[in-house]
Image 1 (tube, helix red, strand yellow):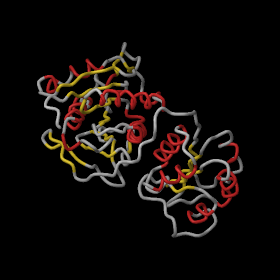
Image 2 (tube, rainbow, N blue to C red):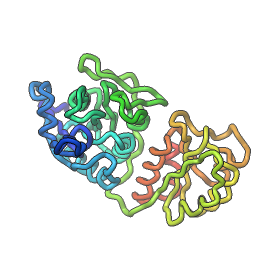
Image 3 (tube, rainbow, N blue to C red):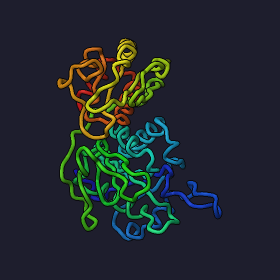
Image 4 (tube, rainbow, N blue to C red):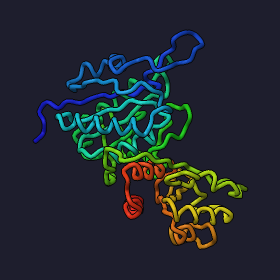
Amino acid sequence: MTNPHPRYRLLTTGGTASMAMAGAGQGVTPRLGAADLLAAVPELSESAIDLQVEDFRKKPGASLTIDDMADLATRISELEAAGEAGFVVMQGTDTIEETAFLLDLLHRGEAPVVVTGAMRHSQQPGADGPANLLGAVRTAACDDARGRGCMVVMADEIHAARFVRKCHASSPAAFASPAAGPMGTLVEGTPRFSFTTPRPRCVQLPFARQARVPLVTATLGDDGEDLAERFDHCDGLVIAAFGVGHVPESWVPALEKAARQIPVVFASRTGAGSTATTTYGFTGSEQDLLRRGLIAAGPLDPFKARILLLALLRADANPDDITAAFDQF
């Protein structure tokens, strides 16, 4: 039964939208709370949406951690169990493409979770935080958003967490989904969805252990001589590979050895498109890596592949579960 008086919640973690200058020439730092952000959007106070606010963290996006997101997912679950119908998370944009995907993996409920932020702080001309917050709240309060998991709303576009990327360092239109396009847009303030994506199987909380998963990028002329040192004392490894999943031939012995001991995932460093499975057969190709026990990330980019592997390891997943989790994508 639909709740006739749904409640929604804004949870802030810091980021550019919450930043202001302490003094001339000192640079901006997180200073504004959730109530301050809400006060900058009069349309929300005038709307019929029952929106509660909560200062969850006060950190730049670059300083958020896996544990912060696990705590946030747990808090959202508690609030949803208490009857709240949707959630907006406002954070720094530096890590949105990773945090949103992690929340998508951890969030079990039907209530939408919408992540947003700002590319321009509150004291800059054309600050985009208020408009992004308004769009995110309207999306979270939309009946059609239920069951879609975690989404990102920026610049009136709605992105699926698994596809979204930050594609520009400073532009207000920094976010895109190169592999699929936005899953929806806000038209005159109303969310309109173009497609849906299957939700990933959830990773169980609380996490059972710590884990370390480095990301190593293949580059022209890297002979891999120190490759073993790069992933020594690791629980898993992600390779940002060339093209559809290729590495230099000189890397292969070290990667094969690592794959006997820990899960090793290879993803395309291009940021769009999928790793292949049957096209190339040379040493260091995707077929060769699969034969040697590596796991293909499919359409997941290296950053999201790392988040998935790290979350699975922290949940103490076994090797078969890890392979199956990547297969679902």
